[in-house]
Image 1 (cartoon, chains in turn green, yellow):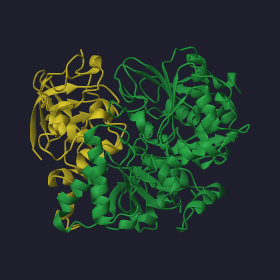
Image 2: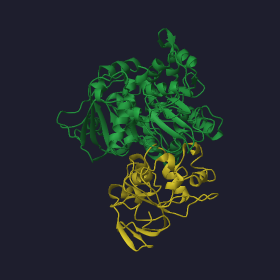
Image 3: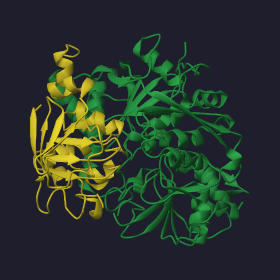
Image 4: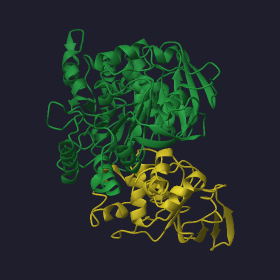
Length: 431
Length: 186
């Protein structure tokens, strides 16, 4: 057969037995996800193009999570959430998770996993570049714009060029000072922000399969930072256990063939890696934490789809337990489920929430928040020429707010260690 | 799709991401309201660091203060143009600002798809690196039939990569028009 896992899933979705890189194929989409920034314009295009007879191809396959600009007084941002609400009411969209209700979830990419929409072997499109996160579940997932999403909304189909695959193998389990964020930043430093453009990034090896689902999501989340079409990790027993807990939808597990063709294969030994940061102003501007240690910070931020999961806060809490932060530190749980878990999960009998509060952190409501700057009143937004260290996924100029701010990306361990010292700090000092 | 596009160029570097093209704080405006959507034009490329805005010297705004449209309909970019988020607001903002054609060494996938499927701007790939050969403000002419760019200021001519698979979508106007013409949708 000679196919990679990505090729096999795309072939199945296109109703073909075999596909190869470069081929343009039409896919049947299993789930379309949208949010408050791109949902309203997607709906507008769908109405404009399909007219009065506009029909949603399958209401059960449309999922809407308002998550980007939620806790703001900005009227236009609030209007976007209202537009989603009206649309969901008018068309009877059951998979709508409204703000201000018990159903509100927070950041879409984690919510997709928690609510059982990530199903091995399926194809998921979303109006967000980090939709590639869902690939951690052995499925094909990628981001599209409003026009493509509107086309899917009306037809359930979309064209895609079959990508070449790149394989990244991590040998050996992760030492306690490393996290998935260190692995993906290392890859970005090696292949740069267009090193995987239009390609699939397949993660493999014991280092990957020893990770929890949420840590695996940190790897696939940042495939887009290398330009990747999708990130993917084959499903295993860890995946199956997570999925079965959340949905009874049928799933199919695919593996790459031993003789599948790859654009390239890179191998890493986890024992040879060390904690890293991405320096301003690009996720591929990677350096060891040691080499930038001592840089004075004005803000620390732990949150977002890539860095605000329970595993991220468990890691940060290990370091913050019994310590005080030395600079203003924001804890932004990606989802409301994670926020609740902060009260339930404990270290040495103390809840994570108590650990963070005693350390002097500010715990915010679940949303995308300052990861992408957002409206002026967004919690944690970078001001003026602030120097920020953050567990988020992008540090482009102005990404977290002020154009003059400098943002370092790092693992939650590194951010927590840096928060305690007030300067960039290698987490090994605390472990 | 116009067959000949002429005008002044605006030159940028590598990795122009979507946060630089249209900062996230502006994503709240309606894309369909004629008055409100002008804001996308006003803020197009507003987060490009000043020293890199309008190469080689920088310091040039793509859209002048108090204006909603640019005087530079042709953008000359480097590698990985449009990387970052999936926001279709990015090619939309460029279209609102008056961008007709981008010529870059390479594009990020989602931006490229959005530009084509939404019919906002023509994303050409250059054969050779051009952002060190063309200067902001140069008058150029792009022949979309012959796939060439002629720099009228320097009298130099550069080949562009044929648009290939995406040409029928660009010629139809957008993905929906293309799908109707090919009877995929009614």
